[in-house]
Length: 326
Image 1: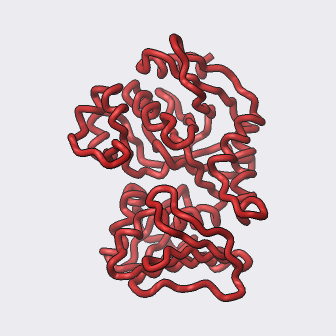
Image 2: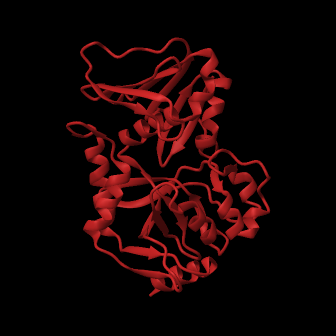
């Protein structure tokens, strides 16, 4: 079966059986589109043993994946990449041919929708000069512009994004932003629309969100909240490239009033790079130099602020609106 998806203007064709495409729906479901005359990138998925990289392809890095902890090996030869989860699946990406091929063992189909999917989507976007950044993004109220909010995992991106969404901001994503590089630089963003992972504390801080949650929590005190359920409370627009109005980096919490102030663009770029660039013993993983260039362009062209959250949480949206309006 063949399905088509629109990733910020880049047309992705996925060729696979229905049960192999289904795990991708958490990322691509809202991006489905009609068939195009030509694909910008083609991803094929089939059942089988992993495909090993050529012997002459050097190993870039080896280690556990951030979300699942599964072992992963990444090798490269020229522009081509091989991502292998031993005993589970492999992904071969050939950017110059605009092709990617995933092979998954029958008992490991659930792994398709994890980090392997992000690797594949990242390859598609990179071919279109679009770059994934670990951040949240929201439409500003009554505006055709967007805000990008950055913090490392566990530092409050999802809580902030939901607090803003409950106050009229349009939720694009709480975790995966795509920077779009045009002729004038990285001036637009959109969000990969996956379900949110909500912490127990977030449900307590935001009772409206807490009312959508059940009493079953994982080992990290989190549970998944789908965008479909969330839309009963907030706006969650269909993703499309939107002009970037501001970048906000979360700092340490403060007692008393919130603090929102301009920050050094150099410091902001260092913090963004530290959380978004993969590294190997000899430096940044090949290909991430262009991701860094996109981040640097966005920071250079956009007002950048540091937000230190105090109390009450629900007054943060008003502070951000007043600051950006001013």
